[in-house]
Image (tube, rainbow, N blue to C red; front, side, top):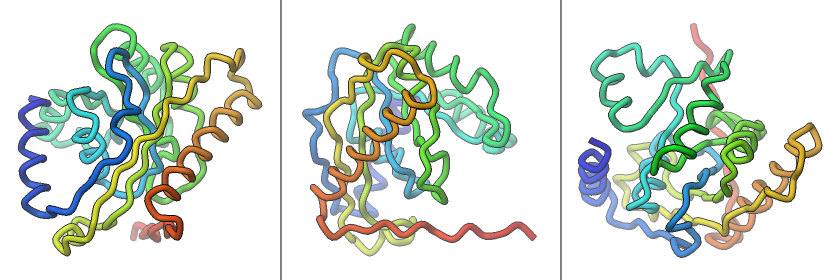
Length: 210
């Protein structure tokens, strides 16, 4: 199901926007699982990251509300997506991806900020990588921020950075997690600058629920 749907997405995105490029694919580990992290800028960037990292397959986190629809929930589960309560994440938010990294051929894709409306990184990616004893691979997306924007043929660029080894961080206390976050932020900034030295990301304004 994962292979089939990613193939469908590849065709659709090419038809919608023929101006995509990938930088730094050679940085992606070939023979080991890893945690792919990126600043969350669109709802569809995970699809571009997955296409860029193929043939590596990923397990993804998604908000539990998406699983309320039984059909969509079935598809998501077949594509290695697992639900997370973003308001009250339980132990499974860490244990599930760690098991995938240790016991399957799946890497894990995590957006440390948790949403498109925040720049603040959370410690989940660091904890997952440390517990699974894998490296963190930074990635960034630059391009249209709305689905409609893809139809303008504006260039879409994904850049993958060198793996971040956190094995030297012995303890993931407050200082340890802060150091991992510093390394990720530094990598994101370097990748953004590599694509476009003048790039500035403007966070969308979150609509308040009525």
